Image 1 (tube, helix red, strand yellow):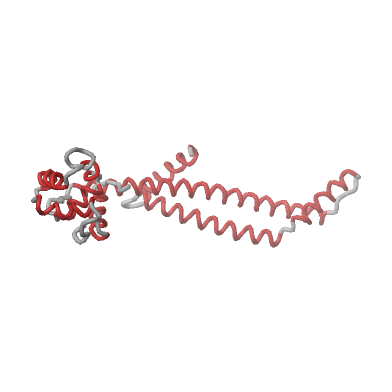
Image 2 (cartoon, helix red, strand yellow; image 1 turned 120 degrees about the vertical axis):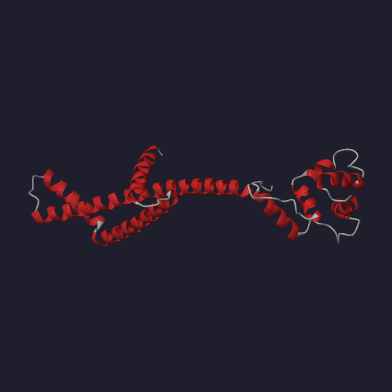
Length: 223
């Protein structure tokens, strides 16, 4: 990671000096595209090398050269040239394979950088959005859903007298929400009692999704 961070800083500074209105996320995305293309080209070259390079014959030539040398037999120039050519191709293949491995490592690092910057950018946008958020016009049924999603209803139900009386729960919530007790009670009853009609139960898919989005906009994560 240390090598990557040093290289990243140098190349980022170079990118900022060479471009108008430079954006770090754009720099990262371009680097990933470049590295992926580099890998594609390297793999293509390796395939071409493998078509030319017969590894079995190369090691056969190597063994023959060594055997001739041990027996003080002069190696034919053609044999040496064929071996050197194979050796050059093999070195090129290994070098390209190592480059692909390095590129893959860099792609992982760049991708991680991208995700962190993107996350920070979203968080910053959310903070700006919070300045304009106002939920004061939330409907009564959605207020109950919101209190439910936040765990407030379940918490209050563990306390007296709300554990025994829905009316008491509706009354205290009227003081919190500004809604009338008579308005809230029909919404609360079906949540905690399956024996009553579920017609007015506010915990329906549409209302939950709408409220969850409002909470998400605040940065609250639904469990």
